[in-house]
Length: 81
Image (cartoon, rainbow, N blue to C red):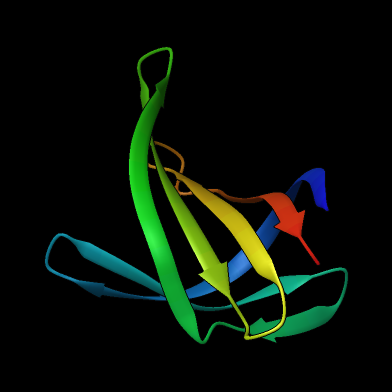
């Protein structure tokens, strides 16, 4: 089941050149460790470049996005079985 969330979150990420690897995020006072990034893609909201990450903690799939202009992270969706 996919649930739309669209909430700001705090993310710990490793920046390695042009690569960004989210490692954990905090949502509703809970810290979620990221075990794997399963997919990444880019879009634009008007003129603002956005990076999207499909990540998992081993049990749940999350969609995160990064506004490359403001550097704000969002939890877009949560997918559970």
